[in-house]
Image (cartoon, rainbow, N blue to C red; front, side, top):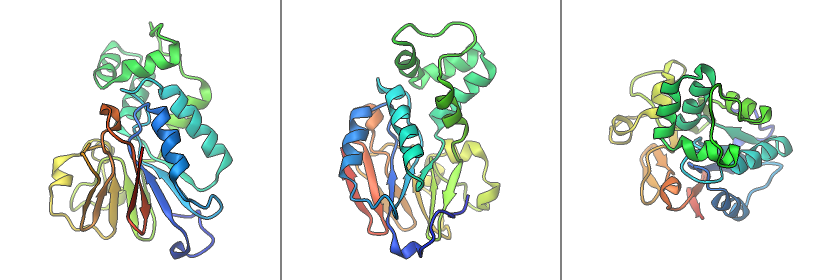
Length: 226
């Protein structure tokens, strides 16, 4: 997933990465209004977990689809919550439904069904939304950064990382003394404030739990909140 979006030198543009949204439509709109980005030049990367827990997942996804259509310099990564939804959509099993619901999936189902819920084979997603989920990337790489939802397994080449690690890894990545070739920008692990260390930037600040939604501007490492 190498960076092929820019015709100019990467040093001439900014990158804005947005953390875990979790159905918080108002926070997303507010945050996006704050980002001082050049839509013709700057890159916008979303780190996954657009749905669940918050009440307005459908509106979040609709907003992102519109953004994707209107701007070419956008990247959308998969989060573990989108993976849970797709697993359920693929299998239709009660087990996958219960598992997804245990991670906040019920709020997403209600947002798509106006509170009715879902019975039998899953069919509540509009086709553009289902296609959006299916097209999400496992990671994204630029000259200086690796963007991923959860993190990386130490000692494993990027193209050999397991999808479960990319979407679910926590302490072995966040607390490990790994040295990667590029700075890793990630979400997934909620923290009270952005996490910055040598080679790692974490920007899940708990929007799914009522806390703020965060974006980071690179290479300046400047943060924006809503």
